[in-house]
Amino acid sequence: QKDWSGSFPSGKKITVVFVIGGPGSGKGTQCAKIVSHFGFTHLSAGDLLREEVKSDTEQGTMIKNLMHEGKLVPSEIIVRLLLKAMLASGNDKFLIDGFPRNEENREAYEKIIKIEPEFVLLIDCSREEMERRILHRNQGRDDDNMETIRRRFEVFQQSTLPVIQHYEKMGKLRRVVHSEDYDN
Ligand code: AMP
Image (tube, rainbow, N blue to C red):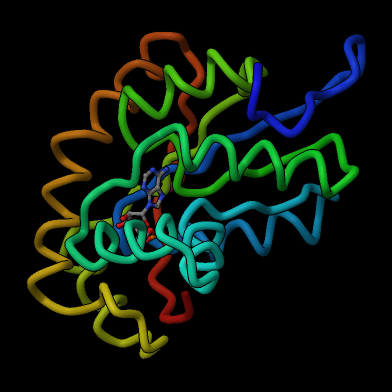
């Protein structure tokens, strides 16, 4: 329990929904819509990591390099950032986007945060559409280049699909088929 910056008061009902989708599937866009309707706090795993990169620390540099290569950041780091942001928000309803991205993420979450998700939203989008959206979004992201995009698709196929199958088996998966809009 050493390094975790606290935990939720026991007995308090905390609602967690995970949002999973490939790179460029529109997770952020969909979350923004849900949040404004239902009073959730939206936490994006990628945004929390990009924030951490800005801090000029050894950990920030390590995260930056992994993201640049399209690889996943160690689970302990992202779970710790999530817990910190959840506690800081003061809210009890969370939409967590871009998480869990592999089995290690899921296991670390279950060990540390331990709040079973109500359900898991999968933003279903074709690869062509995801690629088109990434190449059009112009957010100046270091990882929105063809080589890194290819690697991120591989990671999604190899590491995230098993997590999706896990939640599908548990009856927790809700699929949302993407409408073709351009904003991210
Ligand atoms: P995103 O903003 O969701 O496209 O994520 C951008 C990058 O951040 C990914 O390609 C990974 O390098 C890293 N990242 C995002 N979420 C996670 C996560 N849950 N676990 C590990 N790395 C992550």
